[in-house]
Image (cartoon, each protein chain N blue to C red):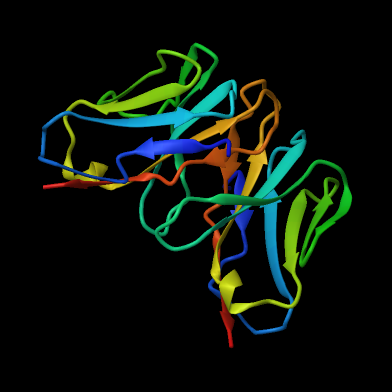
Length: 112
Length: 112
């Protein structure tokens, strides 16, 4: 089955220690998104790629970076995680245009 | 005013009843509308999308769109305890990247 796969499912890191979350897709979708979701809140878009074009949301902290080396993979790098970065991180993909988004299972990030 | 607003919850209905979830949006030019279901601790999953005015039915789910009044709703007929979840309304922009703005969600509880 075509899928969006996020690894790892759970990630624990230390305050200030860089961490990378990964996402892969077999849907061959043009667009990949990274969201941050905290408890009882809506998903908050951090950035998205349309093919290789990177789009950063205005309020995404500089601490968050992303890479998309090819169509299938996308990475979220958090350079110096703070306690406020503890959240569920969701990767999603969609086809071109106003298409539904397909979400991975998410990575739950904890900061010690 | 938020761009996408959902009726405040939580919403509780008895098993077998109809659950009605509402969403209003501010961008009159919006063309694509999505409903996602999110179980606690899980990622959102698409349950309905609608692009045209009127009703769209899929099993026990009906999405209703009224662009003139800028609202979209989701009806769940014969509600089951397994429908208990948070329902997220999302409104797509009209770009190739297809970004969506999410509402804060309405939490539905179906009581046996």
